[in-house]
Length: 281
Image 1: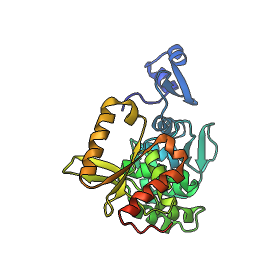
Image 2: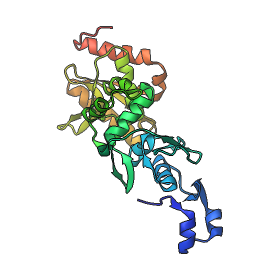
Image 3: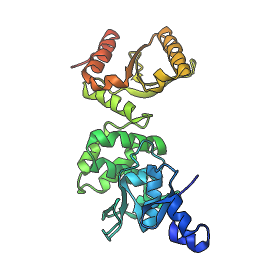
Image 4: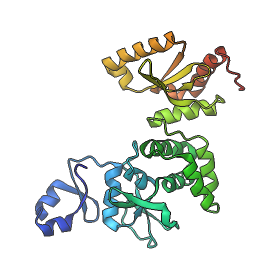
């Protein structure tokens, strides 16, 4: 598991570290919960630090972090559920009611289940922010939308429960980065059919970010590594050539283009129309 947060007073009492070394080489994440100064704080480490600090059930972003969800903001406050709302700065306490089967253990910590976690994230945030996070949670855990809908059915009167259903219409655990999630939403918001994610081409040993098999149009999000890494750039050229030889059209979208959604949508729409897709926009 690598270096983990620890309770400072307990470590000193055991003789694992001196008080001087604790103060010099470690920083307090929460009161009496420390991490070495040279270790980068992640959302996962913050979640464990909060659990050590007050021992309450992790929920929301902290539960998502405990499940291994990627790309979470490490500076966001930890979230827990307990009856006592008092907590140190940097920890948000919720007093939500939980059914007995809505908690589990993740890395020895008590957390809300993946389905309940997705439900709480979906109802507590605007869809544009919630969807990439729920995408990543689904990617990390294999969670299915049906399991989240079952939680929503159990809590119809909870604040924000109706919002969850609109979020679930657009989530997709196939997204492999927040930018892929945002690109997919951008296309759907632009009136295009929802694309399939992570389309496999076993004979070519290729996978594309998203696309439409029926019309053989693919869309690829190119992150920084696609331009800065020489090997990656060479492979991108080769794989696109192979896809085009197989009759596919590939639209590549770079980070800079994400600020021009209308250009992206029109470019993809043109390829879909040319392939026979009856687009209504």
